[in-house]
Image 1 (cartoon, rainbow, N blue to C red):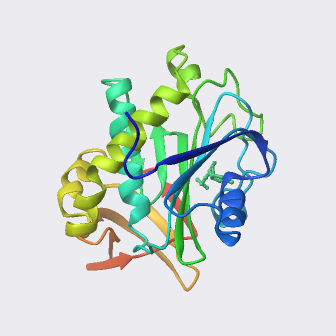
Image 2: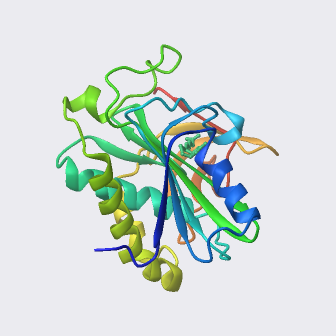
Length: 242
Ligand code: BTN
């Protein structure tokens, strides 16, 4: 069955970045509705904060483009929750966590990241998921992992992408109508940061405290001294061992 929200999937063997390609296609107004860009490899994969995103064959590198729609930044958290659910269905009982605002972790290692951008009045949600790589670049091998490395399983990428897109589509109207309300319980049950002592750099300031969770809009809540503070976006999150 075709996906109702994303009617077109454009596939590439290799591309600089699926997010960059999405921007070019939006600029040239190539599609008149939502679309997905999928590449086997990226030569200039981009992470948040201008970090490089290693994108060899084996991973799932894609961008979901919601045409002429702009959302709150918590669309990233929504996408992370859906991605976590899709992975959990595939790998029941696995130690998968959602790390606010955009990571999926396997124990303490990064399995997936999400880079949301706006361009031409549209939303581009770039999803990078380490799936079938047997090893990762030495620069990230200590801090990241893949499904294959952790489980030995080879995942059918197309099948997984379809499942993920179907789940995204199935919950999307709900997210649009109620914002994150019905997803927060799931987030709370699977949150990596909750209860951890962290230093968070927001660009304007650096705050240290214990993470309490997220508020109804998806902002991170941290207890600093005796005061609860809300963080909408963070440049860096350092977790302290206690
Ligand atoms: C992060 O955790 O820093 C976000 C990583 C996002 C990577 C994906 S891979 C597909 C899409 N294209 C890109 O260039 N980046 C995103």
